[in-house]
Image 1: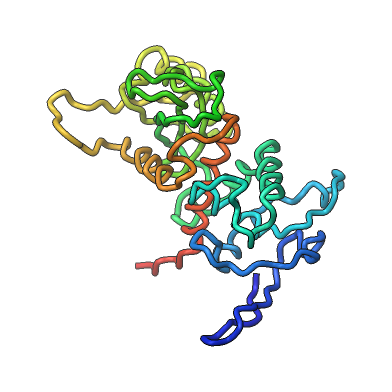
Image 2: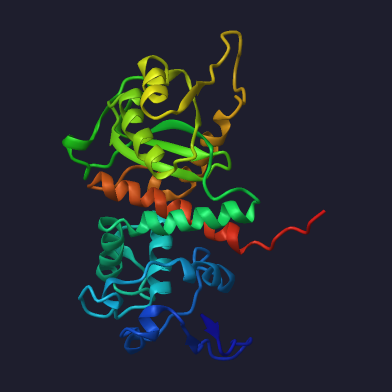
Length: 305
C-alpha cells in the first residue's frame, strides 16, 4: 500500500491511499475505499511488502466460483491482528475496519480451508531463510500449556488439569530451534501430554520430513519415546530437571518453547480460551505467531561481519 499524501500539522487528516492487494486490483474492494493505518498492530509498508507475495490466491481468482471480495485484504489482516493482540470481541471491531461479520467471514474461510496455516508456514520459511537457516528444520521442542476457558467453551472440549488446577483447554505445540511454531493442537485440559503428543508429532513429522530430533520434558517419558523412534524415526530426547534444583532454572532447549508461550500470553485473545471450536483456538495461535513473524521480516537485515 502506498501513501500518496501525508497530513501535516494543522491540516486535514484525510489521506488518499492506493492499495495493491488482489481484492483492490481484481475484486470489488475499490467500491468500499481504503483505510489509513493508525493502530500499533497495523502492518507497516515494509511488513505489507513482505506479506503480500505470501498471501494465498483467493478461490474466485482460480476459477473455483464465488463472488470477488469487496473488502481490502490488508484491512482484513489488520483487523484480525487487532482482535488477536487486543483481545476484543468480534462485534467490538473498530468502525474504521471492514464490518465485523465480513472480517469474521474472512477468518472463518482461512480457518476452514487451512489457509491461515499455509500463510503461517510461508512466513516461517522466510524468517528461517533470513536467519541463515534451512527452510525445513531438523530439531524441535514439544510442550503443552493449560489455559482457563471462557463460558462459551462447551463441556465437550474442556476439562480439568489436575496438575495445574486449571479448568479449560490445553495447547500442545512443537517449535523449531528458533522458537517458531511447527504445529499446534488444542484439546481439553484433561488430555494427557503423551496421548496428544502422539497425534501432534505424527502431523509435524508428515509435514517436516527432515525433523529427526525433538526435545521434551519429563511428562513425555514412557512408551512415547519408543513409539516415536519405531514409527516416526524420530528421537525424543527428555530434558529432565535435576532434583537438587531450587527456584527458577533455565533448562537447556526447554526455554525455547517457554518463550513461545510467553509470546502467546502477550496477545490478549490467548490469555484465556474464548473460542467455541478448537480449530478457532488453533487458528488464533497461528495468527499470533504470524504477527510476530511479519515484524521480524520487516526488520532491517543486520550488517555482515
